Length: 404
Ligand SMILES: Nc1ncnc2c1ncn2[C@@H]1O[C@H](COP(=O)(O)OP(=O)(O)OP(=O)(O)O)[C@@H](O)[C@H]1O
Ligand SMILES: [Mg+2]
Image (cartoon, rainbow, N blue to C red; front, side, top):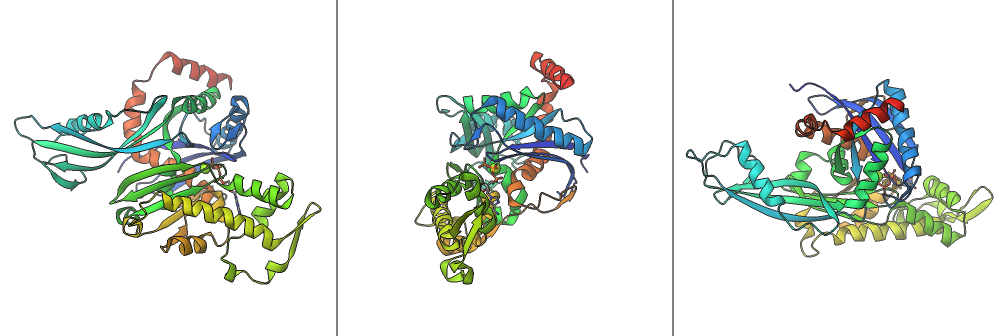
């Protein structure tokens, strides 16, 4: 069994920064050693807009996680998302020219390199090239071709790119507080690790993380990632609509949304629909508040659906939709989802999390928990890279860490 290793994840969200220190057991259970959750600063729609403010929030979150774990955080897996994310599927092919025609690990690397060779949008950098399926001598559906015999190896990959400047700003904030980056991971891919089962991914399923600033979408089919997208609408826009629609200050609207907001389909709403609710001297109708939230959630669910081909989406994702992110706490969101999609819909809360996990049983923490799980799955590759990463930049990082 692989040795357990302490891993750190930082989810720099639009509304909160969550740093998680944990170790993953062989069976996929996480033992949480430290958590640091702080309100975000300097972020808009999941992107850094003020380096100093973002850095302060990250520093605070890391400090808390260090205090609770008693460990010094030197490097972390960091989530990235935002409207700038682009994705595409690409194909790679190589010949197996060796005498024995057996596929080796080297060939996997070569065929992935060939699939990576796509035209990346100007100003973007490659974030992930994820192999989806291999074919050996034209025989598709091969999950692991190593050890098979053939003349030709094909791979289908899902390529994800991000705007270079958006990534540079995030990296600058994290490195600026003396923490090195093990790997940048697209946030919905991380969330999926925390809440989807292998069977669901095999059948076909959508994950949508409805956070504060963005709704991150990830579609899985035949066990692998098939499509990713980021929508620039989420909880912040719901609160803004409530604030404008009902004439409330933003923070009162946010409080009211979290306390009373519901998207129960109309026929499920009980007597409270006639009630007036009030907060800090502001009174509004429960019905009006819920109408605004429901209209926004309805719109977001329909936008999620638009990411799938309209003609046969039921056959592509028969396992339905799993919702994560803080906004999926809205009561009735699963029912409304079922009405719109006519497929199973559930809210995904991170499971199998032990240790000091009191706050993590909330869909808002699926990304941070998933980052640790993703890191555990991919750590060997990262370790190999970091072994050769003894650069001037690293020395600077060590010094920054020392003075922190
Ligand atoms: N009980 C609740 N009811 C309604 N909305 C909620 C509730 N709890 C949290 N939210 C909303 O969830 C959002 C924050 O979710 P989350 O923590 O997943 O976002 P984030 O990760 O910071 O942002 P993003 O991923 O978009 O960058 C806020 O808009 C907040 O209002
Ligand atoms: Mg988030």
